[in-house]
Image (cartoon, rainbow, N blue to C red; front, side, top):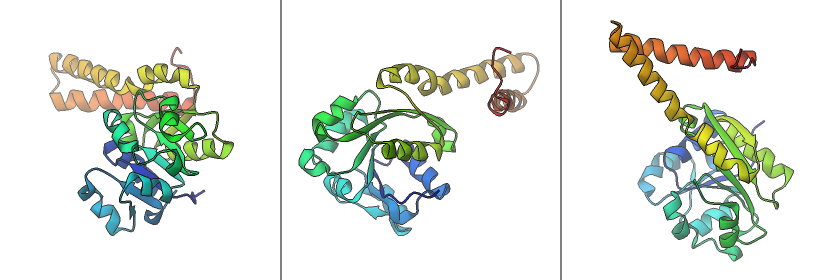
Length: 225
């Protein structure tokens, strides 16, 4: 079911674009529901040409958005939130994908009553195969959770966890792609040592691990079997 919300992005780098494009590709939203603000506005021109809304400031972005994804770098977040103090926060749902910043951090800036969802996505979201876990503030509603789930299921899967579990999620799915890449590298090196070309070894290694993962996902069987 298509969403009827205006979805804002504070920061529209690689991960922000992965989520925004995923929503567009899944036809969950159209361009006129996408509201954008970035420190580098030139990167937004192609979206504006297709009907996306460009906000002039974070405060305007918050006013125009039903849900606002906070997708700027953690070290830039203080400056980005300066505009959006509690008096400007409005009734917007705030969804953070900034690593290491707690729900209480955002409520300090946006007010104790602000509705905050903290998310740990991962890089395969860029190819619509992401694994994201999210934690909700006590102020969030069932509708807020349903919206977050719809957003992250447009680029993979979305799993609700307590905020205290997000460190474990970071170690598992957040860092997991790097383990996969290292395993592929080891397979390729072994294949080359045994006489395969690098391309042959790479094609076989990537497909083997992809296929094994797909088997687990499609059959629901335990990896231990």
